[in-house]
Length: 381
Image 1 (cartoon, one colour):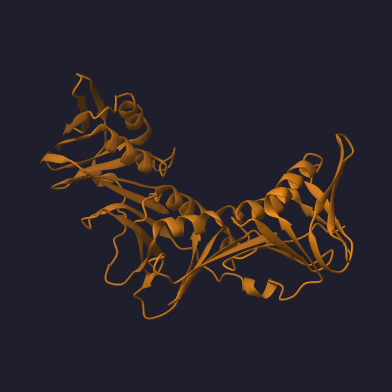
Image 2 (spheres, rainbow, N blue to C red):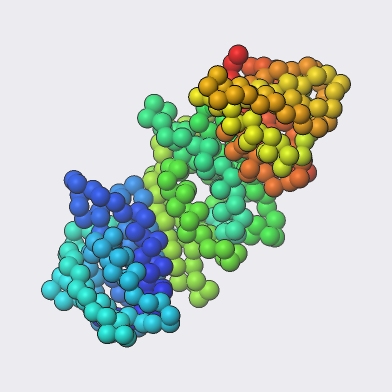
């Protein structure tokens, strides 16, 4: 192996791959990245056996080859090199990676045989789903943190993805709250589904967070390929060559029929300015106590909502927020952090907050945007 590549490009690819690696006592090869050269591209791969990432960067290849190298150590070495347009030359000799820069930097990193590195699955690419990367990234970001790892109910540990002919839905829940984001077919979304059926699967939260990290902010498309138990997300260069691919296992099991728990009507509803409500919820949260509890008081026919909190050790808080109110009197308590998570994923100026009384699920919706909803369960008094 012998190739030359821009230092900043190598750093970028190594940074993407290294996030998948970690200290693994039983399989130390997983602490490494696989470096291999093709005719015009360098490929860097990493896997933890459940998630795999591959990055390609343009390079000048003099001799093809491949070697596994400790990810963290190599990242430290490359990180110490200046990136001001500088190139580095990298060659493999006797299972060592020799790194030389134009400014006379030279180091030797011991590696391992590529034969020991796990194979990252490949996919047939005749049938795929395609969508604008920026739109997908924003949609996933609005739901991903709602999911919570559960060994008892592994199906809610991931993000539910539904791909229909004209729309996509991303859903996440931890059983105390739920977020759903829908993307409808449009010219801007670039949505294309070449499958002859609807698709749905559950992807681990870790994989979705890595996908959010690797999607660039340049409106390129993400292509999605599916096998029986795995899924591939791919971003390509303008010439069609892959730049980054992420392979993840699918979580087995049936996702809960979440639409059944979304209320179809309300007993009390308020409309409020989103930023004002965020500010008041944060203030009340200072005195939310060990269970992060705040209470909302609404009077029928009124135009205000009272937000209260009290902690025996630190004090109490009471604020009045102007709202538009429909429906019955209400006194209800919530985990203020859960309410805040829903509000912060909304972009519109105003929101609606719909209640089923003191015990049923409540819904937060953006006014003027019917593609997002956030369901949160109250704290039972």
